[in-house]
Length: 134
Image (cartoon, rainbow, N blue to C red; front, top):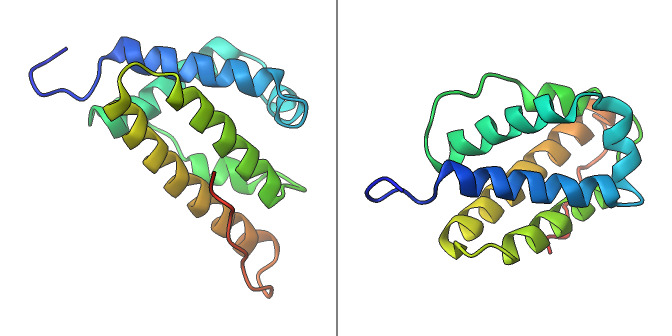
């Protein structure tokens, strides 16, 4: 690990792959993700770059995750809440708790932002609801 680095790329790799293993096994989220993701290795590589950009301040991520999530249909708060529960469980199993705590903070902010954006896009006249954070 570089001097003063929060974590290693291997720790991010492990976090991402362990988390998405949980997603794929989940009765509710697994089918939603599997319907859209055909090449898991490529997707997880992109997710590693995304999390590296947040946790290590790298600049390898290039994408628009909000737009991808806004295009989904019939998503509910419970989907985001389950995503957060699984992410929190994965973080709790990390040896590097400093990384895990920051990753969870980012995940909560991201989920809330996506959920508010999703509600605004799909129900612009309805008052947005909050997520129940785990």
